[in-house]
Each structure stands twice: as C-alpha cells, then as structure tokens.
Image (cartoon, rainbow, N blue to C red; front, side, top):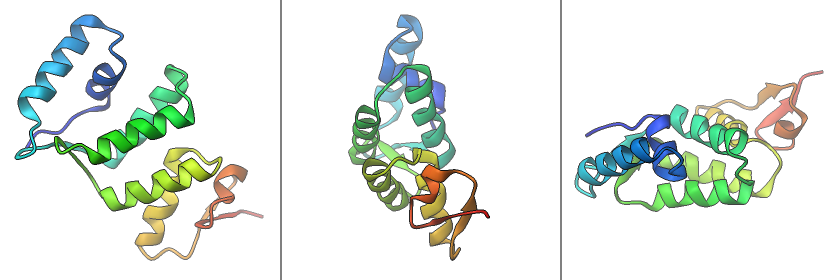
Length: 132
C-alpha cells in the first residue's frame, strides 16, 4: 500500500502544474488499484479541503463532490471512511468547515459528549458546544 500526501491529490484534482499533475496522474494510476488502493488519512482530507476552498476558491458543493468521488473510488482507501461520510453529510447540510464536521463526529465516535469551541458555525453542529 502507498499513501498519498495532500500536494499529490491537489495536483491530481486541480491539474494546475502540468509537470506535477502528469506525475501525480501516473503515480496514482500505476500505484493505486482496487487490489492495492492508495491510503488517504484524515489529516490529508482536511488539508485537501482547506486548499481547494481557500487556495483555489472551490465552492462547498464542488468540494463535497470531490470528497464523494474519493469515498466511492475503489482506488482509494480513505481512513475512517464511515466517519468521513458522516462529516460530508454534516458539511453539506450546514455552515461548519469540513474539518470541524470531521472533528466533531470523530470525537463523538470516541465517546466525547460534546466538543467545546468558540466557533459559532461549528457550534451549529450537534457535536459542538460554544464555550461561555
């Protein structure tokens, strides 16, 4: 199994640097197969979403479709995919950042009653509570 870093996934998705995009495509097509999928961890998922939204201006809807495509790809093994699916649903329905959705759901799955935050948008999610 190989693991993929954020920058490789960004080059593959965005295709903004021809040489790096070509290398990313070749790597993923050669190394990531249904029998040996490429591993994408939770940190990389959060970084990728942040880069797509902040760096490239992708909308929530487009980012959600990228996450969905990754989750349904036989060539990728997304860490804690069930948790990512739940975070995706929360992200699509609310205003919280994807990372906040993932944090709240991941913490709940690890027996947290709530996750305290100062972030109002995150607190709109049932897994978060505002401090104060």
